[in-house]
Length: 639
Image: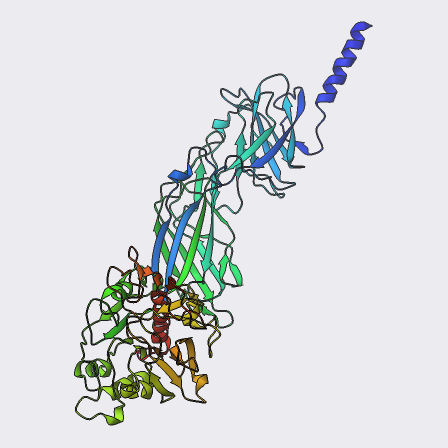
């Protein structure tokens, strides 16, 4: 009787441990192998970040690869591919699997040896966990595989799909299988021998993934849509074995891996992720753009009719996330700046020497990769006139050439008379007038009173009544005031934003400094105020109506500053607080401020000592504007 009770209890216990959980489907082939006693094992599941590898430190991270390609029509592609590394705590930065995701669980015996398949099961993720049946009579391990979706379990090449594997087979002997271009993620986790403490598993990724972003912010454009594909990647690859998880390429041809077409109207659009099988043996890869549509409703395919490729040299490795960023840059055509100044010492009054020349010729500021992307900026210092350039032959020849300069800077002690008053073979005054009327860009740094300024007034259609020497003396500063006539914080000279692109910083609320003498002021003809932008005005005593000291003539490409030494600064920078206000960072030659005496800094005419002046920053914005105007509204625009 006692034996009967023990037998019944054993049967009851056995029945209890073999009950399958509702979230698990047992796919074991019971005709080939007897079903032994099992128990339910519940494990919390998550996934590691793509590329999580404790052996790869961020200090040893791969540098990005940058490739440039000209697309024509003033557009240059800057393509950057880089490996995305998880956060510094990447090994712990796990995320859950999708709720309801299907997981294939291959239970094997002899976990420290041959890893012989015991059963194959399908489980669904519920409450961030899965439950499967595991043996109670011998040690075991489990290989988990998932696509992290709710539709299918991965096809890992087991005979007759995944439902009737050949049991008693080693994991290492499972037939190799070939993947074509993957459309889903593939994750796995191999427990090895399971001890009593295992409660959580975190899946690793098999494939690599890539996303592509096209950014139009540096072009001043919106991106409507684009289509791209990764080429030069095997169209199939063979998995060595379930025990190895490495791929070898069996491909003799390649297939594009398409990225989901990105559409919308944004400054930057990002594709969906594309999965691929890197073997680590291909060192050159190409991304092909079949289209890149830009500019909102006025769409234009900058990829052209045949598309555009960019190729980078980089071996792609598995379990890694890559990002590709395509910046579409506005690249200005080559420009020439003619400098005209009678005094040609070390101070660079027209950009021909000194700090202003260093600024104009520094690749930091103007180059293919500079703050203002341009193919070249040539500074022509060949014209060396006297003070009166009304009949100067060299300047006449330069301005009437079939390839006139795009921009002309007139610096210290340089003036001309009205064209109608000039006689002789070379009427340079007429050449200057014709030049600006045809779109030539002119920056005039003038310091002459009414006696010699009829030429200045003529090129602005005589809408200036007078130009007077009644501004502040050396050390005076002038506020860049956005509240003045036709001015605003959106003006290109004030804001540094030209053609929709921010090049140099805003100078709104900054000061500029007078160099060594007395500034000129401009008196605008009554009724013509709407044709000028006023940037600064004089607070010096005796002005009465606070006349402007810096203006832009809106009808033409003309800027006038009432100081011939606005660009004054030797090549090393001067500490003077009353002279040489043009100052740079002399490591990069980028614009920088300097301390100035600060005379007439306040509207009541008071002095603010050590006021910072920003002549170089203001000139930087002038040059960005000048290059833009020369490109799209200049004398050489149609050439």
